[in-house]
Length: 96
Image (cartoon, rainbow, N blue to C red; front, side):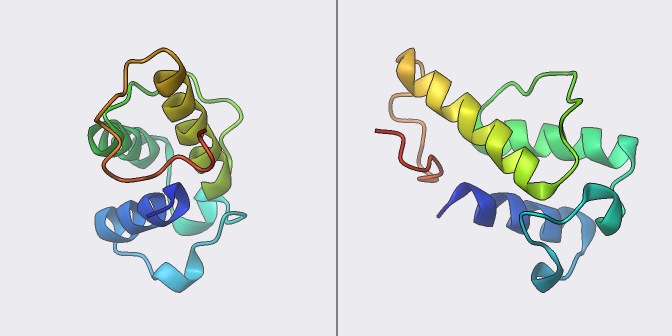
């Protein structure tokens, strides 16, 4: 499963959203994520991907921005050898 699909599924499950309404370019405020909901969602992402998301997310405005941030963190983890055996989601796009 690709990172976008996982992020979308988490958004759908956590906030009862229509999956068809969520695209990479969908703005977070369009789907009703205020700052508190966004922080809750970051915790869900950390749990799902076994990552530590940066506390300051100034560039994150769309679903695609979240996907890009998660992919960067997953690739960085692979490059440092810290993620061996933990990527059961298959989420990294072209990590090799």
